Length: 428
Ligand SMILES: *Cc1c(COP(=O)(O)O)cnc(C)c1O
Image (cartoon, rainbow, N blue to C red; front, side, top):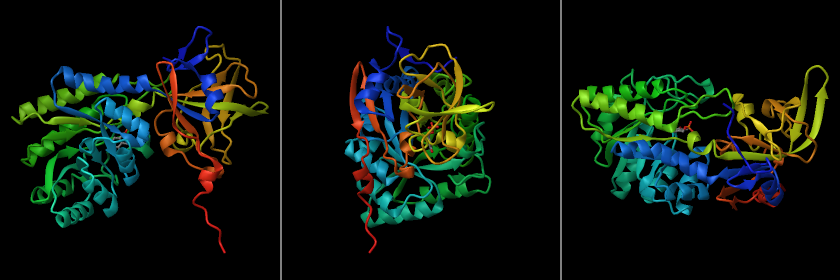
């Protein structure tokens, strides 16, 4: 199945009821555009199964996928929790007036400053990752005579079928407490004995862009087995994120609801079998919430035809606004904004404007004839595009526009050259 998109009566690409070409004209390109209804629908899809089955839950948006004030505001409106991984994301949550009790903090090397920021701002849950952090957090809490809810991140040794670079669930991982060596159990003993820590439960994250439920069932099984073996009844079991999305017609993602059903079923069966109280289930979808909602708009510029090899079609953005193809060989699909369904007449490689041969946005794309000035839309770019954007080659980062019910609104301004130079100092 092709990556879905909307068209108007004239057959032009629309996003949230507004034509992509008019957005490109109004805000210039390159441009990040989000269909806010799509974001809301995905958030609701993850929640509905829990609600229908009367299971206590938290859907915590893994905000590293796309972290801006406006995005956090949409999450708050939908009663979605937030997972952050840095002081910058905490600051963004504060700027968005996000309810800090609904924020959790992941990461393998949180600094004392970041942890201090978390506990001073009432951040709900810190997901402890290593012994260094347990001790650091203990000291910060002792200084303040304050207590903090925590989860323990466990490396469950479950391998999800995914690209090596973005897989974090194996034993050979920088994240979490290792099970086989006994570190996880030791961490539990230490944190349970700590008067400043309130251990809510355990957490795992097995990878990204996962297309079947098996990995989640295995991870959930492992987590319940472990806590049972350790004689610990968790209030919370967090099975993490990684729910796959459709980037191209080759991808066959499952609906959000199927992942949630499988996770609930596994945890219900296992805890019932052990006679344990049913815990609150947390999940941390990132990509699946924002990925399908995002469109990157570009203007087509130069072209190079290498006879007998391929044609390169260059656009005014590239790896500075979407590094995933260069970094992970990630695949996307692009359409011509003014006529996305036109029959294809050429196959091109869509290249960016950055000085790297690997600066590619789409490896192989069939398109109708194109000319300089046409607007090209890359689909399903909402996750890890803006959040991984850089100023490589001193290109300013694009603006972000939210569109909902036919209304468009600028939510992140386009960076200017002045913005980029603001931190530079002369060397005398
Ligand atoms: C990245 C990450 C997620 C989200 O992953 P997606 O593939 O975007 O769903 C969730 N939890 C943790 C701990 C992560 O590091």
